[in-house]
Length: 335
Image 1 (tube, helix red, strand yellow):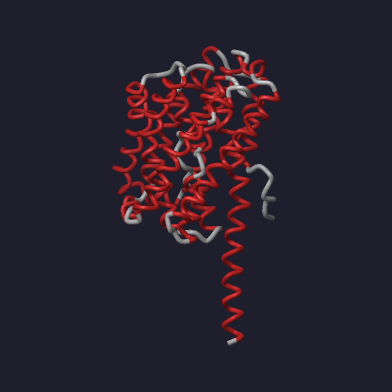
Image 2 (spheres, helix red, strand yellow; image 1 turned 135 degrees about the vertical axis):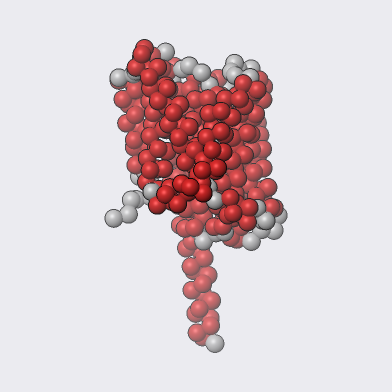
């Protein structure tokens, strides 16, 4: 039986359960330190397995559609952050500076991979281009996200790791495992393809562990006293505005630039989505202490919102294509 389009997915339900658990039973002391080491290991393993899974041949072949890929990357790493910065004068009246920093972090994250491709497929878009665009966004995000975080944190007046420190942490915690996975791909690539459930398990487990540790520390420091329910609603509304703006820009821009409908669909889904899978481990590397909990709140809310909205949009795109094909078939039969 298919899941109703507006119900949360299983991962979102697990995230809610983990946040609730951390709120009631936060880990502290030696247990928190052990969990921190475990999450570091799991994140390294996650990027190693992603490196072993990614086909270099497919990515190289897909990069021939350079105009589409450049458009997606500009939407992800330029237009989205600019929207976040432009909204700062208004947002400062509704949310705390820490939550605004989380929104800026959301704006510089790379695109999703699996869901972008899945929604593009349902909408009858350019799936090969979506595979390459989403993969390129995630790969470049390893470099661009920490650089943009460094620039935006300074511009925002916040404290954080320096850009150089962030890059070094990204290199040895994320990039080196990814490169090691690419090197090991000839030997273990087929095994990983046959056992994709392992990658999904490592992916979800690392996210849940980071969220639990981050929210445990945030709860100990008084997270829920600083973020009342009304402010959570404000963050959700702001996320909805961000998503609506970027979807309008990607749709209008792709049409103005002369892309066909299949490429437009790819640009909309790859250029408007943000990766929770990449955002959680990067937040652990880039932000210290209880700040991670505040930073992850907008990312987690945006994750569920984009899934619901894109599910509806993908169905509408797909239905439009089927209706057009039916109309052509009817005209041909009439002739």
